Image 1 (cartoon, rainbow, N blue to C red):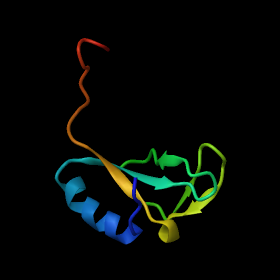
Image 2 (image 1 turned 60 degrees about the vertical axis):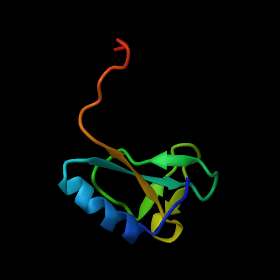
Image 3 (image 1 turned 180 degrees about the vertical axis):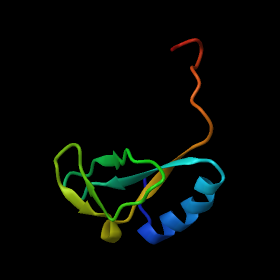
Image 4 (image 1 turned 60 degrees about the horizontal axis):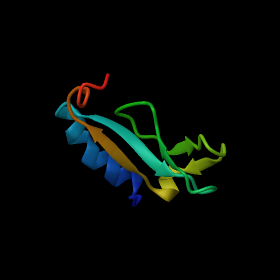
Length: 80
């Protein structure tokens, strides 16, 4: 998964948030390479802590991406 400049991600996510989407910022840990998703929705952060190794990544330098969620999650095939 590619990371992009923080300011570009925030700018492209803003209209999605305004349209009702839920956004979660993602980044790649510079120390161990683990892909991380930030729990706080609809916010962008300049630094993120890796849940795997504890390293603090400078997202403003490294870049990021985001996940978009539209609507409410629904069970698939009766699994609840």
